[in-house]
Amino acid sequence: MLDLILGHLISFIESVITATGAWGIMLLMAIESCNIPLPSEAILPFAGYLVSKGVFSIHVAAFAGAFGCVLGSVPSYYIGYFGGRKFVEKYGKWFLVSKKDLEDADKWVEKYGDWAFFLCRMLPVVRTFISLPAGILRAKKRFFFTFTFLGSLVWSYFLVYVGVKMGQNMEAFKHIWHKFDILIIIACVILGIAYLYKHFKHLKDS
Image (cartoon, rainbow, N blue to C red; front, side, top):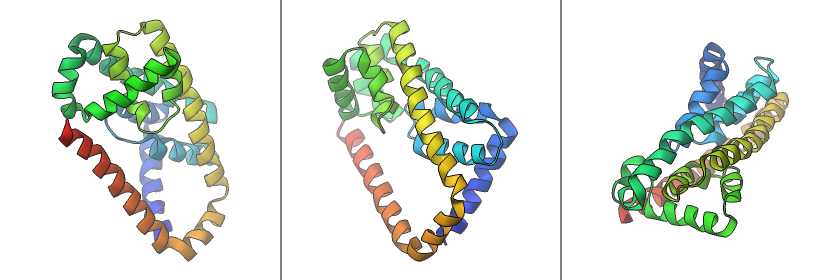
């Protein structure tokens, strides 16, 4: 059951990215970095899967992902830069950013300084929202965008590589899915609902 669902999804992603090449990866990753919860954990492994099929190289996929993150971070950074904290706290929910998201990102910046922009780009969830606090704090652009690129490149290589290994061992995964597909689906649904509930609860409380 699950392998059938994933098969259709993989076919769709394959057709889109095959038609647009690295531009498709770049666009999807840019969307994620614009504070839209389109997880790179779903984008880059599929890109890696296509790498395993020889559609493009792992380096093309990873660099496309990193460049996409930088491009998507630009508008988010400048919203924080020109709007300031009060603007983001008041209207952040329209960008799917809660006060809790800002506070979490602030803690990273306070603890690690400019290096937070590098570290946060390799962490789920917070990597999507770090650009706004960077703009609010008026972080130096050359440091912010450089660390954004480097951190995103490491993250992209990791997830693309995961996708490559999945693609190379697809038959083994299918054998496992046949045995545990119901449990896996239930677990995925529960985790997905928990993530959305937590995220939108923070927005509601903002």
